[in-house]
Image (cartoon, rainbow, N blue to C red):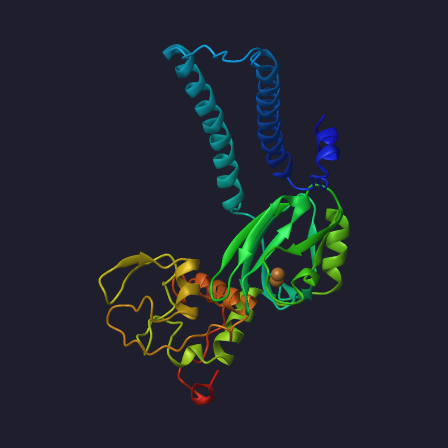
Length: 336
Ligand code: CUA
């Protein structure tokens, strides 16, 4: 039945775990509106025949609907819309909240391509390779314009914005190749900003992954922190410097210079890199330059992972993270 409706409506295959539910709601809304439209057309036709004026001066009887009739109409229509909303809202929550064990892929959009960076540091242009049956969380940002990451077969679409991170996730059901489109007009080659998701079976994926791949995100974050001279102002061992230390920062409550308090989560850390003067921590000077357009999505993500790895302080992660020379060394003077 679903396949038949999909064929009638010209929908792409339903290749992700949310696709069937999204289609279910789509079919419900379309069927309900089609039935009502058919009823309205049929009534109009019937009225035109039944109440046609048959002789000059003939007047139509005045008819008024009863209260009961009105009440039933209102309740039925309102409940139908509320039902659409309840189903849709639950799907929306599910689609915006990635499972905690999802694999992370960083997506960077730019005129006119998609760049994917995997958690182990590999990257690829326009081709996103993922295993079937695993949730994949996409952490996305744009280098220039507003783009929109759209995979019709997965029924996911999410805007990708410069200087901000947006999140999308999916779990592909069956191996295959599915097109990615940019769904937001972003310049002359917008319509050619296409890519594809290659979904492999878990065995093929393990083979593909084994072929290449080195390093991990925390190590990459440490590398970025040194290269971009973050460590000229931020220490990793809890000492106060020009900026707040990264040790124990992640997940802690931060008091800002204007008195607001917020939790240092991924969104806050990313915003602080891209728009540092928006949330200055109390007791520090507003001197940090913006890194918007300078850090790629993967670099920003790697820094967040590094800061996350330090959330219990530098000692807890000593095994993972070799001690860094945090003094503003040779790198400090160099512009990022
Ligand atoms: Cu990118 Cu349209």
